[in-house]
Amino acid sequence: MEKIEDVSGIVLAGGRSTRYGKNKALVKLHGIPLIERVLEVMRLIFRRVIIITNTPDEYSYLELPMYQDIIKGLGPLGGIITGLQVIPDNAGFFVACDMPFLSQGLIRHIVEIKADFDVVVPRISGNMEALHALYRTGCQSKIESLINSKTYQIFRFFNEVSVRYVDEDEVRIFDPDLRSFLNINRPEGLNDFNNLF
Image 1: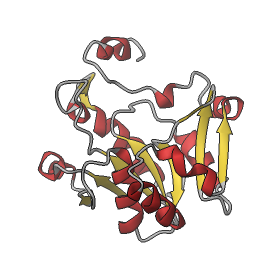
Image 2: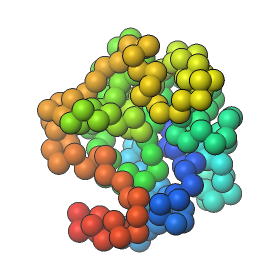
Image 3: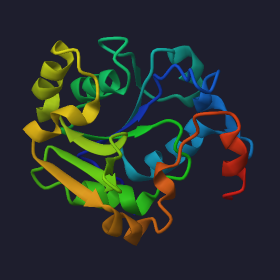
């Protein structure tokens, strides 16, 4: 399949992994670091893939463009505003670095249905998967307002932009078991992931 030219792929690897205890992006699942599993899928889909990280030395071996948070300490929101400022395209698909079961079909679908929406985000049982979503650069001013109000939950600006929700039935067409959104927060969770292969 052809690579997408007009949307950048952005991997967020800036988290401190406080619950995990060490950098979970480099934790190996069947011998392969989680971030490499994420990038394997992202590189198949997007012509341009970048990493947002505040520890670029850890990922230099991946030989991808890397950017540090423009404003540090904001969590994933800081990674999103940074990504939107540095990409050459008018939209980016953002994903966390610890989601090793990404669905190429689902991501391509999210990009294909973007139309003129500012955000395209999966919504499972009412919960938005904000770190597996497409954002347009036009969202920046709304995100900046959120930051200025010291509110750092990503979905808080959704009611001020046009959002296309991808609800569970639609997601399951591409990812029947909703594996795309599985991530590891604690070391004991790794054993559960091993059993999914």
